[in-house]
Image (spheres, helix red, strand yellow):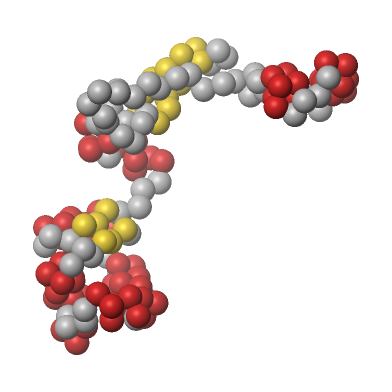
Length: 148
């Protein structure tokens, strides 16, 4: 669970959800000083609750929150789907594949999502252009089968 408290009002709302009125008077400096303790309190509280439901409850009270997702959950996330986060692109060996798009949407520079390289597709340019191997050394490595 990712939770971000951005001020005293969301902090007090969080303390109410946690049923911890003893913590509600802590200001930002005190919260930072007691960070490890507070993380333990939050971890114990969130561990007992379904992640998506907990995030919804937090957001409904004005607390920035989202549950951490695995790949399948991210694929089915309505917001990511709405933002066309996953894009189908051509692939040199698989025909088409799905990749994650840009995390940002800028008005004057729309994101460009390219095709991912095939395994080993750029070995030659990495060896000769980046690592500076001469062609004979790069060819010897390729011929030895280390890239198979």
